Amino acid sequence: MPDLAPLSRALLSVSDKTGLVDLGRALAGRGVALLSTGGTARALREAGLEVTDVSEVTGFPEMMDGRVKTLHPMVHGGLLGRRGTDDAVMAEHGIPAIDLLVVNLYPFEETVAKGADYDTCVENIDIGGPAMIRAASKNHADVAVVTDVADYDALLAELDANDGRTTLDFRKRLAGIAYARTAAYDAAVSAWMASATGDRTPRRRAFAGTLAQPLRYGENPHQSAAFYRDGSARPGVATAVQHQGKELSYNNINDTDAAFELVAEFDPANGPACAIIKHANPCGVARGDSLRAAYDSAYDCDRVSAFGGIVALNGTLDGATAEAIAEIFTEVVIAPDADDDAKAVFAKKKNLRLLTTGALPDPAAAGLMVKQVAGGMLVQDRDNGRITGDDLKVVTKRHPDPRELADLLFAWKVAKHVKSNAIVYAKDLATVGIGAGQMSRVDSARIAARKAEDMAALLPLDDTPAKGAVVASDAFFPFADGLMAAAAAGATAVIQPGGSMRDAEVIEAADEAGLAMVFTGMRHFRH
Image: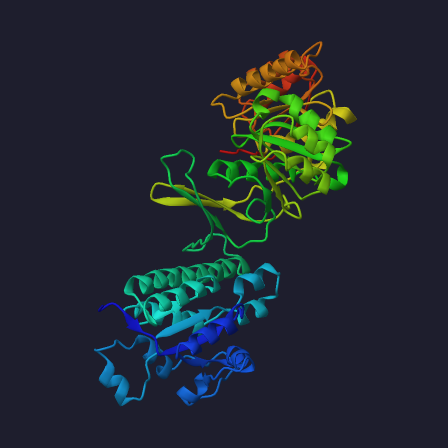
């Protein structure tokens, strides 16, 4: 077959030595001559394999602390030489052909993730590796290139199936993987350089990810989808261990991320917290003396919507809380950890997914958010804005009392994670009504008040829990009507950004209703 390429000589130069010796033995056992560099050559020799140093081929030693070793025509000529076209030139200059390149790159992404200093990060930018990868990938008509340990077995299976040769289709696939790897590597370097130099809007942006899993479908069954990791160490669904349950779906991943980012707003040092999410919006959030108490309060906010939802916890899941969660159908539970009792409870619920992350994400950490639009993408900082009681400006005659102030700050953290327009009613550090995603802020206020009435009817309570509650609005009230809807529902205090042209009118209405109102000076739109 004309697309079959023989494999006589391989160049191996890897940073990650996982599986290296086994691969070297398998290649040598098939009669493949091994060419290598530095630590890779040393590891192969220590395993008893015969290896030729690249420096013997190039006639130059490795120099400049290893910065220069493979950047030489004897190497790149061997990778780029076209069989049947460049044979005479290669023979004239004594350039032997290289049929296989196995390279993985300096661990730049890992070095940055560890918080290394600038000079250390620079030294971990690989130059020779990407150059060789691009050369071999361009010449995939004749050369196979492997950049990932995960492809070692596939390479050996290919050789076994084709009498020690590789097919063109296989080499094309490897070349595609290789170009994606160098693109991702360059994206990581460019992103780090932009951050290191303080360039918030670089002329060109590159983003990359590594496939975590193909998904059955996207938001809807007719949409194909996949989940990619970006390599960051932020605790969450991408880094979690899944203990049980079927594969996560696109919507599961999206909603689980929303739930965990929300519950992380509540420092476990200040007590347990629980967030229940449905369709990326919270349907109940609460703090409590225990995780079980926090879950119960969050669940009470909207028991109907909680069915089939996502539960996020800010501490180690225990058996008692797991028992409560297991009483209704829940798609996913995510927490920093889970004890054996909790795992035993969930083991009886085969469709429930349990994820543990080892830690909570830092809500104050910097990061980027990316949204695709027609013809481009929007890039912004993660919304890591936070306020404390000291940041609040009381604008009404009445000041919030200590209970109201605690509830206002709690409701504000929740409102940050509700789709705008967002209105959140809270009482005793628990949500009692949430209005989300309406085109009119007054409609969100009315929906939240109605949710509180539904809560009262379902539990049942003697009266709506909106009475005596506080209200958070993610953006200013453009008119007094939204505020008055909250007052009519029985709210006693309001937290909002302020900044409307009608602030004076809204403040006057709050004073007439006897409300306490504070301005944050910060908005939390979430689209």
